[in-house]
Structure formats: structure tokens, C-alpha cells
Length: 153
Ligand code: 4NP
Image 1 (cartoon, protein in one colour):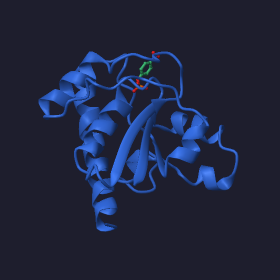
Image 2 (cartoon, protein in one colour; image 1 turned 90 degrees about the vertical axis):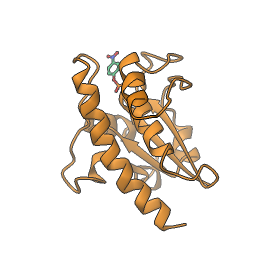
Image 3 (tube, rainbow, N blue to C red; image 1 turned 30 degrees about the horizontal axis):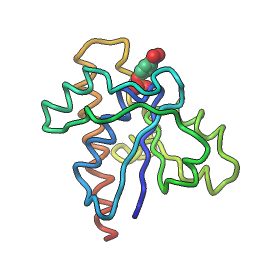
Image 4 (cartoon, rainbow, N blue to C red; image 1 turned 135 degrees about the vertical axis):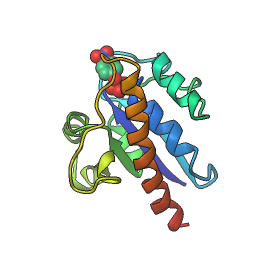
């Protein structure tokens, strides 16, 4: 089982979408996908209603998810950790205890737009429109990730 973790700040907008989208593209018997937030702000909450709505428009149900905070044990439990933006990346790396742990952490948009270190923009304080943009960026990156992972099996 290859285990993948999606991480943003609150675990209510971007990483729940990333979890749902990538999960929809992988064989559940071979891969598991989870998500977490670097902050404690929304622990226990469901995804933001705007993320739930945009996922639903694309046929993906993320309503069963519940926000949790990223913990150091995640470096042990997961094989690949995708940060949604550079700030999330820095916050995760700061918790790593060795280079092997650091090497598990990647910026998700480097999968679709290599080496540019682009951010998935934080849509929390914007309008609904921002969520469709986030969905599109995550769909493109998840498609690349799933092609890589499925080619290994
Ligand atoms: P997320 O979005 O990191 O994509 O889940 C945010 C959610 C909540 C906050 C910031 C970003 N907040 O400041 O509460």
C-alpha cells in the first residue's frame, strides 16, 4: 500500500479537494490518500461548503472528511506528502527530523508545472470562483500523479 498525504493550512479547502480528486483516480486496494492541515484552526470540521460544492459538481463526494492537524508521525505513516503551497511546505519541513523525512515532502503543483514551485492559491477569503480555479489546478496535478503511480503498478 502506497500512502499519500495532502497538506494545506486549514485542511478544509484545498487539501480535502486534493484528497478526493486523487483518490478518485487510484485503485483503493493499492493506494490510500489522506489530508491534514498545518494549523489547528479547524480540527474536527467538515470541508468548507464551497469545496464540497465544487467537488460535487465534478462528481466527487468529500462530505465524509474531517479536518485534522499534521503531526510528526505522518512522516512515518506516509510515503509521499504533498504541500499545497510554499508556506505549508516550509511548515512541514520544519517538523522533519532527518533528510529521509524531508525527501517525502513535495509541492503538489511541481507535478503539473515542474520546477516552478507554484502555490495552489488559498481560496478561503475569496469568492466561489477561487474554488473552481483550485479544483482545476488540483485536477491537473492529480492526473499527473496518478499517471506516475499507476505506471508503477
Ligand atoms: P485551506 O484554506 O488551507 O485550503 O484549508 C484555509 C482555511 C482556513 C484558513 C485559512 C486557509 N483560516 O485562516 O482559518
